[in-house]
Image (cartoon, rainbow over all chains, first blue to last red; front, side, top):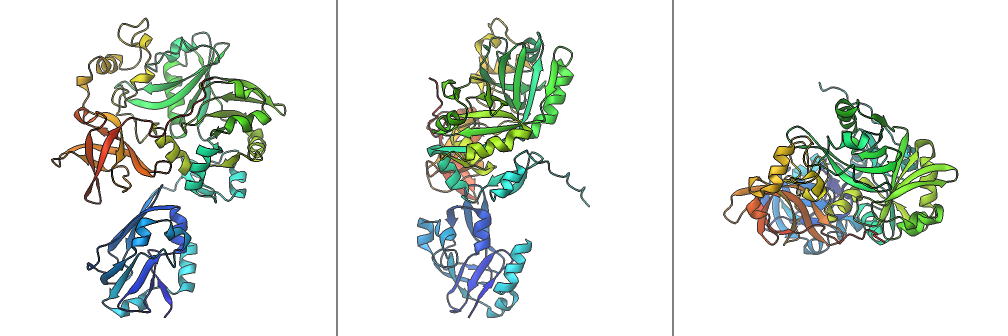
Length: 124
Length: 377
């Protein structure tokens, strides 16, 4: 299972559809700068695709984190709350934001693959 | 369809910014570096620890020349201009006829009936037109668009600059003078916008890049963008024009009474005589007339509070608004400047900033948030 990307600059790894991992992209953390704060959703809460599920902030800016797919939050990254700089140093790894139980795996088909996202981010 | 945006102006350091890998943003009509590859946090901390070089060439530089220049300028600002000794700099406020602040500025007595004035980039066209219209008949108003302005800020700024320009280390805070570097005439003041010791250097635009390269070649010095400039100035408790003060705020509302010397206040030898003096002096003499006042705030939780967050009291009533706010890189705590009803302006008062619908407790705090380190000799 490969990683998919949203136009809102989130990535999702749905290798486990019951706990797909979501974070912000390399491009997003670079645009934002040094991340100093994250606000993560409550476990158990359900969001529709495109809804605001969290917030990520640098010194200079705040950005919403959008749900790339519809689903229920099953876990959040407490380590990221304690050390928000993980979103910069390892955005695709230790800097993940939350895990979501997919409501409709078909939504993944509407997201971009890495090649498409790289082109999208370069033109943004 | 919206009108096409005017093309951005560039400063004399534009090519250098691009070469250094800066991320450029529109600011005050100019393409300016918001950060370099090191990033805002590293740039901020480097300035507090060593020395940072800032391109502030977007700011407006002008001279007021003539035997009547100081007296004429006093009709525009509630500040002691005539009493400023030669070789010294002072903070000033251009007021409109309602007592609101058109701009804040620095002015310097260069001697020879010449005041050197530095105003905000976004305001400079309006400022110069205003000054020309009001006092252009009493003195020459001479804009200096061909000059760049560099700021070198930080505890090692004096060491670095003195290597290139011996003698600057003898200047004290808010003083300055003319210096030569490689045959280039510089005008250097010991002042800045970060709360640190440091200098501002007016340099002919054609030589600005060479000077910037010479400064960056010093081991203490790194380039710093507008992002860190903003976080540094907020830690120092300094107002950002357009955010923390504007044409609707009076100096007493903006907690800027310190900028109005006794000689211009009620009972002073040159009391009043500036726009809306009656209103402004009445607000100083009777603070009960104020309906709002600018304060500093520090959050009790580590949730960044940004402008324009609404401030509420314990009962959920709106009592003010944040005008600048961010997470302080030095303190690792959220800090802000805000306007509150005067009853809530006392240090130690607890208020609540509404962030995404949730109240973040904040305490009214004295500014600067980070102690200043100006060099006073």
